[in-house]
Length: 290
Image (tube, rainbow, N blue to C red; front, side, top):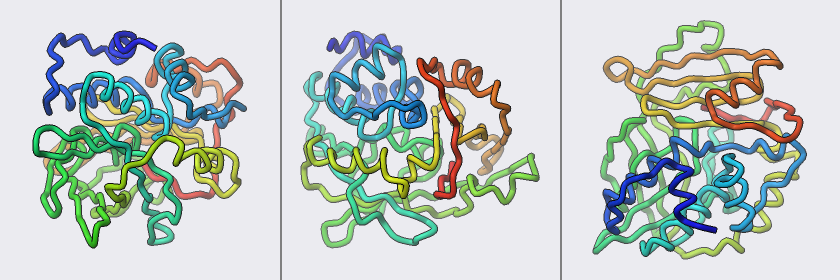
């Protein structure tokens, strides 16, 4: 594995590589706008590998994406190789239908320390919930970013990531009641503690998430990629394109139902993904909002 090959993959050509917030932000933004958040392996009959060599091969050499356990594992390797002080953390994802956080630790995120400040860095949540800049680990402070306002809360050693979203304009009226559409203005995203984790802590959940019929990821195929103006999301045959703040405090959300023959073209043209195996798009009954 070569870190310069990773930088080439994400288009990071800045020779300035100080171990500061500016560099950290720059790398995060390059990664999320080039490397999709996706689980397409599951729906192509392939495994979502957790080993760093396999992740590097998939994401960097084969120019694919991955889910949080992969893209944030790769980012952890990049940051620590550069010399950043980074720590893996484990998250518990909030389910709106169940109105609770997951009982299992199913999300990998990072904490990065720069001087006397700590930041949450996460390249693997995707869709309209993805942070675009590191979040300073301060409770109760609104941290406005292009996608929305993010806020961290802390209660008895447990941290919570929330977001305050804009209003939405959906010109495709038939999609107003779509189960893909996030309808909450105030949205809980996940909880976490500051207990350091290793990738081995995620081995069992990595297997469960890609094999269990109860998993959100076996019932839905998804691919999302941040753009300079917003985010594209493909769930099953439905493509959603969101433009953040297209007019004052309003996001534009456009839906399109793809034909089977259009899916491969969209993956290639919008997400820069060419699949080696037959892909079977799926949108099941497990809630997945964009």
